[in-house]
Length: 260
Image (cartoon, rainbow, N blue to C red; front, side, top):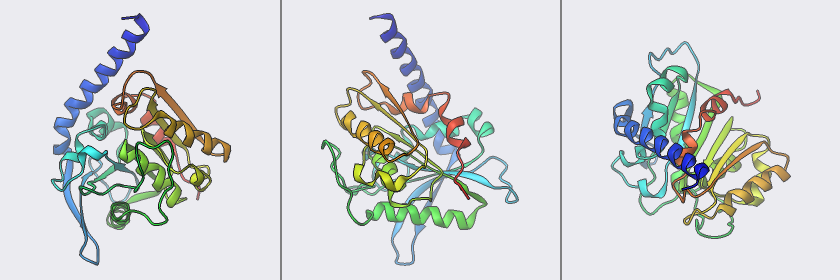
């Protein structure tokens, strides 16, 4: 194996092992909850709270959209991939925040788009899961002391699509977004405006074509947006461990603030 490829493989394997170990501990840090709206519809979710939460302070919040394989109603599977990075001890201390991880029901998507297509058009209305996810966010903002200028969207795979959809469908609501191996509706890039986005993808992704991220990045840049793009090589679809293991990602994310 060439030295550069071996180095990349070692880095990816190390990051994956660390996040896997953290994933086993995540359920201890993320409280199990259920959101119910006034029409009786419910959405299970997990909530990570800042250590030593002080209601007199304002805290950032990350709304995390999981991937397709974690759908269901067990309120557990959505902690399987990537989100556990926020529960690592060093990050709990360095980046005290709320992280909300709603679980998308089986058979539903964060945004009803074809993942395998070369491009797509977002429906006029948000999906039922997205609508409940945003309602959960609003309820938490009423319950806890959350900094409205530091609310972020992050997601992987199906959840990466969710991030692009949320940023364009609810402009001005989020301070930044992290979209990993996802895609969106390029025609809606202008609605994202100057909300900073960091997108990740692997060039050989067999599930979501890398063109989906490339096209969204180009569309956002053409619209005058603020976007970073990191493209990996030979990681397949599972590029989220490497992405959320990037040492600069969390400092970048939590430094973003929405304009008043």
